[in-house]
Image: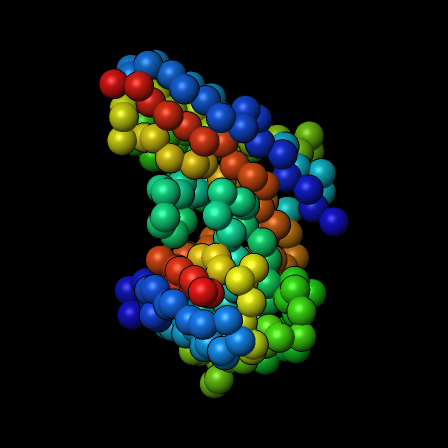
Length: 112
Length: 110
């Protein structure tokens, strides 16, 4: 597609439930990134996929968070047993190797 | 580890003024630097991308400069307009992921 697509745009979930957030990057972009932005805060790096290399998971805040990227394209970020502090906007970006980033519009997650 | 500092953290100026946003970064081994704007509740929109071999890039009323050796970049906005109100983020790109600073919140007063 023309841009990075994220779904859903908004998600409200009950504390303790699992959620899946989806990112569809720009076709041909080998790198895919997940960031999180809590209210009024900066962007926090979560995880980075580059081609077939092992992902850089150094930013994942706990083992409740995981992500996969299937076929080098679509990525899913999974949060298990959600907590209220997980409420944030989750942003996905993609790029060609060492090129500029293109961001999606984000998924606003609210844990109640 | 790359650290990014943006000064000022917030800025309010009357419409029509020219202004400069500053960005400094600690690791000068970068491939490029990108400036983004973020509107409240929205994603990031890319404004300018400067490759490490370049000194500046221009797009309309925006001009970004890069001094890689000193770890500095500036974003110059000419003839500011209320629609320029947003948070501006600079993003130096090293070998892998970008670490973002906290940005500059810009408010243009009508």
